[in-house]
Image 1 (cartoon, rainbow, N blue to C red):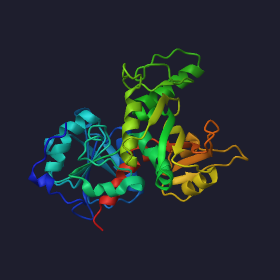
Image 2 (tube, rainbow, N blue to C red; image 1 turned 90 degrees about the vertical axis):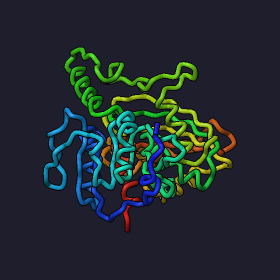
Image 3 (spheres, rainbow, N blue to C red; image 1 turned 180 degrees about the vertical axis):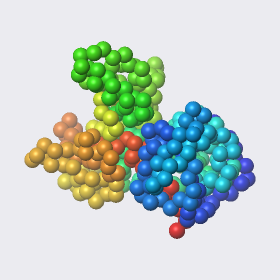
Image 4 (cartoon, one colour; image 1 turned 180 degrees about the horizontal axis):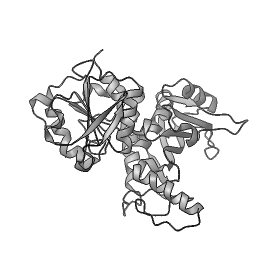
Length: 354
């Protein structure tokens, strides 16, 4: 649990103390950590110093950044002295253990784990959707679940114009959501399958090549929903500011390396035409419309991978709702970018002193 922070933390500025902050990445050698490093470089984030932090087994490795090699240091309580911004992506246990230490040292923490996402005093932020929530942080800002982040970029423009009354979501989630080891397992198992060889899964519970299965998060035996589905429900509600929104979701792991897809049906408080929905989405920040019925071309992981924008298309009436209040759409976003690293860096950019 997040502990009560001392007076220094409670009086932190809502923005970074300097336009050229010293930055630390916690979990720098993981899939999201490497992507954070690349996002900072690609977006020319104006940092003055960069510290890469990871476990003892990764200490001493070097990672490239802006034409030089930076050594990875072992994470410890004293790692945050002189740091203005700490980007955490090392799991909820590490975040719970070290985030308070970073805040006490004077850093603002942007945390990619689930540790603080539902804490009332920690804003859960997708900048295009609810960036104003950054004004209320007390040192820690939560980066959402990847599905919730990607989905709400597409849902928010619709919800602002016509309040959503119900959501039904089916996800098609890539290996990157389970980390670099799962991505490698997909590569290895696919190669083995094509060679006609057996492959014993090590990271995921089922064979991954040419297969898909229910998301491997822990199952809640009473409700029948897994932990990923429950996070999507709770976090989507919180990001959209709709605490009572009914959300049904089924999360599936598919053999794709790094982009998540989702089929979404949104029911509104009044009839909404596909043309109106398409216009709202075409003009929204962070989205790219891919909706060519003639060519049967819609969002695909192969096109979303490596792209900052979330792709949205297949915008159509839900023929199962004769009231005309429901719209179906298909959304694909890069899990490592908008679903994780990019969103964190965008939060950091919004915190910069300008």
